[in-house]
Image (cartoon, rainbow, N blue to C red; front, side, top):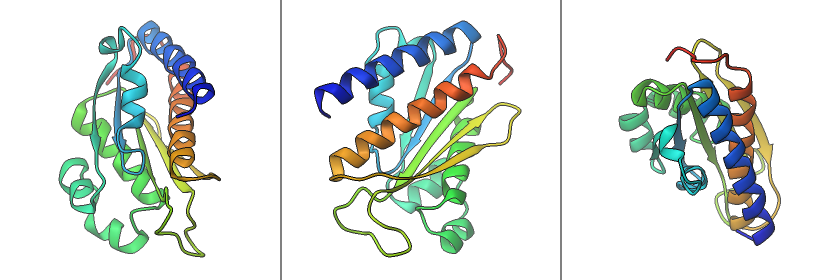
Length: 173
């Protein structure tokens, strides 16, 4: 990632850490197209072990099913790059890792794999929170593979920040 993106990312990750630690919240990640970049950004900040529980890089559909509990029927009906799969990934991650919050990212980073219905740059980011309906955002990012993955990482942390800010202190799991 470019230096400007890295400093923005570091700032967002530090804000998320402060927000989660203040609320006693924990975070887990479920990543496909970002390949672990969200977890890497969060754990780059010293003290992240105080709130980051772990993550799953689920690039293959079989891993989405086995490790995150995404139903094969959901994958078959909507495809791996869909709001439904992003929601299932976030919900499964939160349940399996026992976190307060979980974020998932699934998309098409390119340069290949796009179609008119699902173009390169299409990314779904979902955040599951204890006691709340899972939120999902559809994004279409421009640029090359690296730029798309970086933008998706930033969006994931921003959505986690929003979710963390809406938690009360010492949330339930």
